[in-house]
Structure formats: C-alpha cells, structure tokens
Image 1 (cartoon, rainbow, N blue to C red):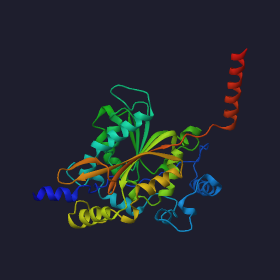
Image 2: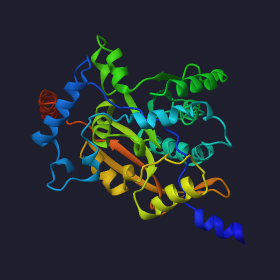
Image 3: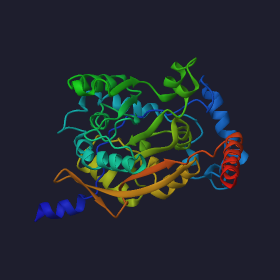
Image 4: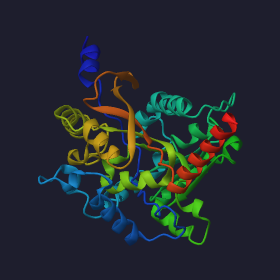
Length: 348
C-alpha cells in the first residue's frame, strides 16, 4: 500500500538531467564565415525590422527576455556542474538512470515524427539519409540509438570529458563508426572551424535538432531558438524535452527530488529557468517554427519507467518544424514564366 501511494505521489517526477549545456550558434544564411558579433547584430536587426514580434518588444519584460541579454546559450555554472558527472553517463543505475529509461519514449517520439515528415522508407534503418544534431549530447545516451536507426548524428557538448566518455562508449559498437561523431565544442565554435568552406557548410545543414533535457540549463533561450532556425534546413525538425514551470515542477523537481530524496544532486536545477509549453511555443513560432505537437511525460521513480500523459504539468516533449522559406522573387518569376509557357503549349 505504501509503495502504491508513494508511486502516485511521485508520478511525474522529473528525470535526472542529461545534458550539459551546449551553445547553438550558426553563421548567418548565405555566409560561409562565422562572426558571433554579426549573428547577434543580425538577430537584433531582424527582430526590430518586423521579422517577428517577440517578448523582448513588450513593455513588460518576461522571464525569457530577462535571461536573453548575454546572447550566449552557455551557462558556465552548468558546464562545471556536468563536468563532475562526465564519467557517469553510462551507469544505468546512477545519476542518469532516468535518462536511460526516457529513451523508451523520446527515441520513438523522434523517429515517428521524422517519418511523418520524411516520406522515404529505408527498411531496418528508418532514419537513413537524415542528418541530426544532438545538442548537449553528454555521453551520447540519445546519439547512439538515433545512429542505430540509420541517421548520421553529430553530438556536441562543451564538456570535453563527457565527449570523451561518448567516444569511448561508441567505439565498442562497429555499427556506429560511420554514423555518429562527437565534438567537444559549442556550435559557434564548430561554425568558426568551417570558415572558408562552402556556403552550405555554414548554415541549414541538419534535418533535425535534438535538445533533450537541455533548455532548462541554457543561459539564453531567445538566442537558442533564433540560431536553431538557422542551422536547420527548411522543413527541418526540432525536438525538445524539458520541464514545465509550475508549482508541481518546483515541488517535485526541486524540493522532493533534490532536497528530500536526493535523487539528483542538490542544485541541479534552477526553477527560474524552467519554461511552460505555451511560452516555449511562442518563442519558437517567433523564430520561424511551427509547433506540431506537445506531449506530457510522467516518470515513476518506484518503477523507474516513463509514460505518456495528457498532463504537461511537469515534463513534456515538443516537436516543431522550421517553416519552409518562401521562394526567392527570381524563383517565383521563373516558376510563373514556366507555368505560362506550359499553359500556352497546352492551348496551342
């Protein structure tokens, strides 16, 4: 009886956090070189020039705009915190046990939503031909299963020891050697390394981005969303799992889990960094995304299992798609001209 009551009490408790923070900054469209200052300036000009109306333009500042002044997603305190856990990613009974269990939900969530967008079928390797970026990959807990589904996955993380753990673990599976790769960097550093390459290398190179248990550790969500819209191809998918900002998430995610039961180390989360699905959806849509679905997730620490639920009060998963860019004027004119010629040929 006690176990049942305890299970009902704790149902929905958040997971141990996977992700070390990783900055996501991509060079501006149509440029092969990277300039962080230029990205920030373009971001500001784009917002002020009518590209969208964001919360930063409102008279009353929002929680998101309050942490958007630095124009960098990396929080050094978060990086230091995950540095101490870098060797524990693949301990399925340790600090990241709940993240291992979360793969039962998040991997099919990513796979099925990508298959609904990309119609090509590859039996046995359903994600073959797709390039995925795993932001804040940690030890590669979700990078590896996506690679086994056939995707070409790049995992990035600013914690070098976590990347070392990821590389070591994947080296034992020959099937992954040609499908996944890791780099200890932020994406702005990755972009800088590609200076002098082709324009395609610097922007819109990924079919999907995964940021699982990451956004609640970032310093600047506005910059994160803005830059995600640049690194993705038109029609590309963004997958996020995170924690809602509610009284329940504070009670269970911080008071119970960190302070009472010590399921995760004290100080792992900052409730002020949590974000509601509504706020996250508005943020993404103001940066060129269309949110396709939001699903509630529940974690039962008694059984160690996750399940889907109608409630997003604590944990949730979100799938958004980058709105396809409008055709250029010349392309529109050419298409129109082609259509006119076709019509004329038909009438003749």
